[in-house]
Length: 259
Image (cartoon, rainbow, N blue to C red):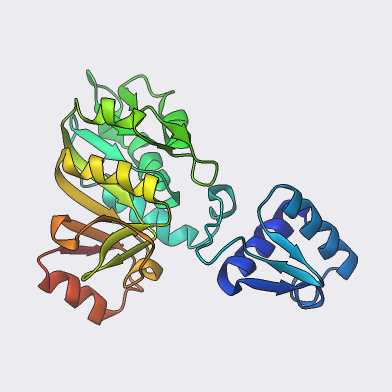
């Protein structure tokens, strides 16, 4: 197992459990305890965990796995969701994309749509996610608008009051939200309050709002609310979504599509 693969596995285990012991992690990853100790030390140097005697713990109660280590989680579901969301977009529209692994898949699906290969522009994309802007900027038929702000290393998203100047001057046809949790009662949410604030502005500027979330996010709650459920027009999720959860969203007036 490569170092990058070990680090990704260690951080995913830590995100799920909150605490890891060296011997336990070594057994699960089938490597030596010395290798795990070295990995944990290096991750601690990057401030991605806190070393303890015999293992590691997360930095706090609300732990956010950095985006570059989340790309493999629910990958096939996110790709299907990404394509389904992209299919909801009409050529020529202005689309807002928040950051996240699922919205990144939406951007990739938009980039390869055959009917979006030409136009003036074929699509206008407004995003606060640096990685999404980077992927789409090479498409000359797309007009890419990036908000201002301070970059969050966990999600590559620009946050803070500098984003308000751009978002206050635009109008969107659709805003696509990547979320940490989406619940009928508590709405769409993110880990970080500054990130949620920018995402909320994107929603307010859009004629319709789409939440792109794999089934593990449904019914989940997170610290910072983006918007109430009643502001969401469509939820696109995967086929593993529990029927009861789907029914609750539909009863709340939200169109639910499964991919």
